[in-house]
Length: 296
Ligand code: A3P
Image (cartoon, rainbow, N blue to C red; front, side, top):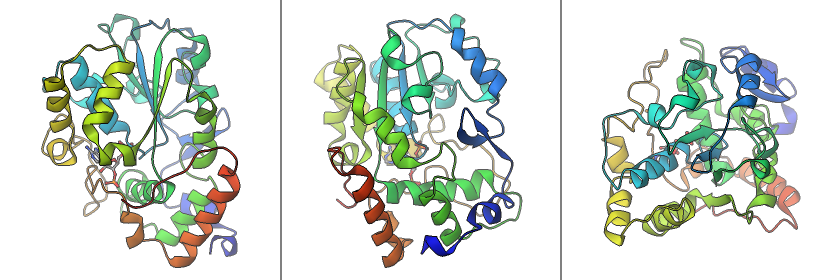
């Protein structure tokens, strides 16, 4: 159980590259305050669409869907991280946002009140927030830490990672606080709130919802085409969508496009961990109306 691991934070963060707090949120050091704060003056446009998520909840999947919708279902060879830039990441600081062709689509991992370029209820643009059941997010993020954040040859133990996830000591903080920052805005006119599990159940229906939300007039045929090009299998085989360009210092770790399933957590969570996470979810989500599907 997590409560017995008092030093989980120190134990894990000596195995990985430096992190720091940005406006109170734990982030990798490559997200600098200077760059983040410089975004506050960017002029947004009504045609801009933001995709915001807690990491591993379906960001890239949604980026690909919006990109394809805006391209009438046609793929190109531009990497998804360039087509839909993660603007708050200082590695993208050389992007000149005002000169990007419109309509623009951006990615962010920030909670509602900290969205770069303005709080959503003060801007003219649209926001798609995607969430996923926290057990699958924890497992997916565990493999991401191992692949992208661990120092060369360092191995992170699952139980250690799990504790840090539960305590909100992972990138972008506490998962449930993050989703609860967006949840009260789910019915705002400029917010579309989606769940990964619904995308798995009926991708075409979600593609049609996204297209309608962003005001893209596409036929049923194009909706089907977008869905076909956004399946896990299609994206894993697509060099512009599968992050094969992002290199790791830890050979033998998983691909970015790892499994894309609902319920893989069952292969990692102990029964105790699963109960503990259920309890935390019950307590924190009680009365909010938000719930998750852990298996389909
Ligand atoms: P897994 O590690 O469980 O496989 P993000 O883009 O937010 O970082 O999320 C990455 C997770 O989404 C990974 O989960 C990845 O495999 C999954 N994913 C990406 N594209 C997907 C798709 N088309 N269908 C299902 N899952 C997808």
